Image (cartoon, rainbow over all chains, first blue to last red; front, side, top):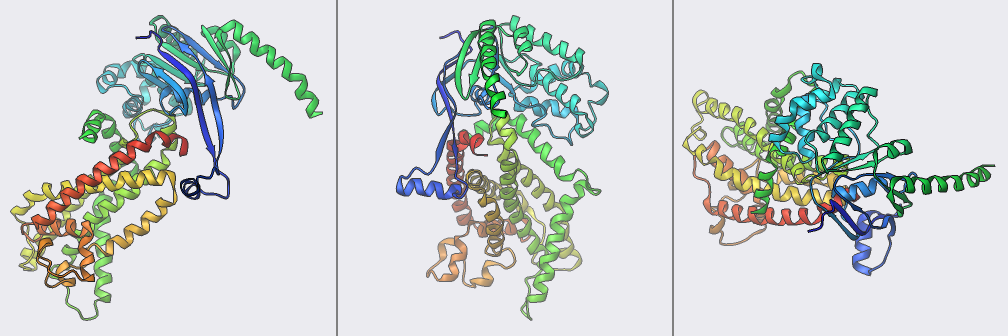
Length: 256
Length: 277
C-alpha cells in the first residue's frame, strides 16, 4: 500500500460546452444517430500529477479560472476524472463554499447534524463533538435558534467548526480560510496547524500568498488547467511571482 | 438488495433531509402542519363538486367523497413524489457540487416525506368512512379489519414510486424539460387511474386481471399499474374487502423491476450530475 493520502496520475477533467442553439437532447441524438461531434470540449484540468503525504498542508495558487476549485472537487470525488486517476486514502471533507447544505429553517444544532452528515461524519461522532462545535463557533446563545436569524459570519463559523470538528483525514478549504474576526481566524489557524501535526492533510486554495507562505509546506501552481509547478512552498511562490511580474507590463500596454 | 443496504447506511442523513424538507414545507404558514390534512380535503372537495356538475343525471357511486378521497391521496402521493424529487434534484445543484454524499438520498428522502404525508392524509379518511357508515347509513363503506392488509398494498406502491422517481430524476437532470413534462403526464395519469370512477363502471364484466376473456380497447385502462394500486387501497381502506391478489402479485413484480431499473440507471449516471447541473 502506498503511503500517500492523495495521488493523482495524469488527472484531467473536461466539460462539454453546448452550443447555444442546440439543446442537450438534440446533442445526444446527433451523437447517437450520426456519430457527429457537435460538442466542444473544454479541459478544466489536464495532466495533473501530485502526491500528498501525511502532514502536508498544500497551498493551491493560480489566477482565476486556473482550475483550483475543479481540482478540489475532483479530489473530493464530486467530479469523476475524464482522464487519468485520483487515488484518495481516507475521509475527505471539502468546504468549497460556506453554508451550503444548511437549512435556514432548522436550528443551529440541527444544522450541525445535517451539515455533518453531508460531510460524511458519523452520527455518534457528531453527538460527541456537538458541544465542541458550539464552543468553537462561539454561538452558544443562538444554537437553538433557526439559522435564518444568523449572520453570515455565524454561518461561516458554524460550517468551519463542523468540518474540522473530528479532524478528517483530508480537509479541503477553498478560499474559506479567513472567515470571522481576528480571534476566530487565529483559532482556525491553530486547528489547521494541529491537523498538520496529527499527520492529516490540508488543501488550501488561497489568493493570499502570505497565507500560503505561512501555513503550507507545499504549493501547487495551476494555470489554465495546467500544472505549472508543484513542490516546496517558497520555490513555487517565487516562480509564480516572477510570472506575475512578467505579465504585468503586458497588461498595462494592452489597456493603453 | 443493494439499494436497501445503501439507504440503511445513510439513514441518519436521510432522516435529517426528511426533517429538513418537512420543515421547509410548513415554515412561514400560519396553519403549519395542519396543511397536511387540509390539502387532501380541499382537493377531494374540488373533484366531488366538479363531478356533481358534470355527471348529467348519472348515478354516483355510494359514499362518493370517500371513494374519491381514497384514490386521490394515494395518487397524489405518487405524483408529488415525482415532482418534488425532480425539483429537489434540480434545486440542489449547489449541494451536489459542494459535497460528495450519496445523491440518491435526495430523491428517496423526498419520496419518504410524501409517503409520510400520505399516512397523515389517511386519518381523516377513516373519520369520513365511519361517518358515512354510521351517520349516513351507507352500508357499502366501513372501517374494518382489512386495514391490517395496508402494508402489503403500500409496499408495491412504494417500490413502483421509488423506481419511477429514480428514472425520472436521472432524466430530468440531463433534460430539464422533463420536469415540465412530468406535471402534465401526472395530470393525465390521474384521469386514467380510475380515481374518479371504478373499473367496474368502465368494464362491467371485469372480474380480475386473469379473468379477461377478450381484450378490447377499454381494457387499456388495466395496463396502468396505478389503477390496481388505487383499487387495492379502496378495497382494504373503505370497502372491507380482500384486495385482488392476482393484481397485487403483478404489482410486486413490477415494483421489483422498476426499482432495480431505476436504481441501476441512477447509479450509472449520478457521477455526471455534478457536471451537468
